[in-house]
Image 1: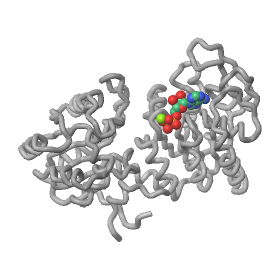
Image 2 (image 1 turned 30 degrees about the vertical axis):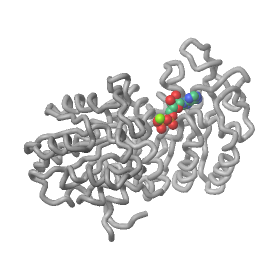
Image 3 (image 1 turned 60 degrees about the vertical axis):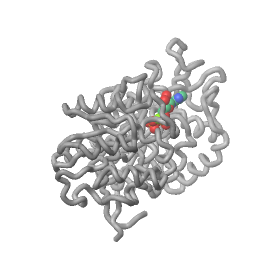
Image 4 (image 1 turned 135 degrees about the horizontal axis):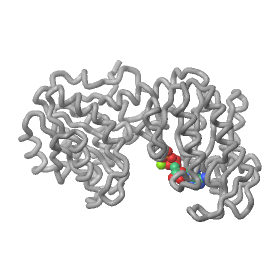
Length: 398
Ligand code: ADP
Ligand code: MG
């Protein structure tokens, strides 16, 4: 872990009339060119407002999706610019390139208080490669650099790491808040600390499980990842998704939790169906005795009750990963029940993960959570105690 202090906007000196390159995380979910959830755009507004208030001219940039170094028309940032302009009630000039003469010309003729958004950073192969020339070209657009893209902080990309070597650099307000909140959870959580993990794959979250065992009092496991826990302990999980090559790791984690007196709570019942469709008949079954022809698609009502009991005693709660296939209404009750328990708790509550946040918004509970973490992978890695390159470059030396 880097020593020192996180540099912020206050470290950048006088900004009146200066151009500031702001790395945003506008990686929003899209349905064609419609933005289905603009949380990530809204989360960066405080930083944009602060910098504008300080008199800076803003050059905003972000990635969107995985265009892999090529121009993919469906991943242009025009819908993002439109939504941003709508939220701010201000004009946002959208450029069709990331770097190059046309971009330079527009940026250099910016009038005070104006704002431009560069094209999708990942259209350029230099972004993910952290190419030195690309980083320098990006940096040459501005006098200072602000990183508000916590969701990309675990990537050593040009706009996250490379540019910071060329410009005075500081964290935006969102980045600052993420680091503050997650540091508290990692280093000094109020106890009891209860973590709830779910979601699609156990392999994605085993490192997090391991790190959390050292910090939490209870770990509740739901979602598809629960089946590997149940099966590793000898349970019958029918046609539910499992990752047998991870059973040994799962068993080791469970043993370690046991040794440390950490409760690992698994679902007792599951809502099963023959297939994940709206029409499929549902059946609530014991979680460790799922019939051969069924797959578990949600945690059952008893599990929700038991999880809620543990959640009610917590003073710190971290939740990442839905309890079931909540996108389909018949399999959403488990996720909704856990979301309600977390939202209703008096504990300090943190929720991360794109799908978990989408679930909270679907249930209209997002405003009852203390901190919505915009970074899925980045938040988990941070909590694991790993160094995030995008944060290291913002730290002071001492
Ligand atoms: P997050 O984005 O919050 O980190 P993940 O991406 O890890 O969460 O997992 C979310 C996905 O997991 C959702 O699409 C959900 O449908 C799926 N999922 C959860 N439980 C199950 C299950 N029992 N069977 C199949 N898919 C599941
Ligand atoms: Mg996800």
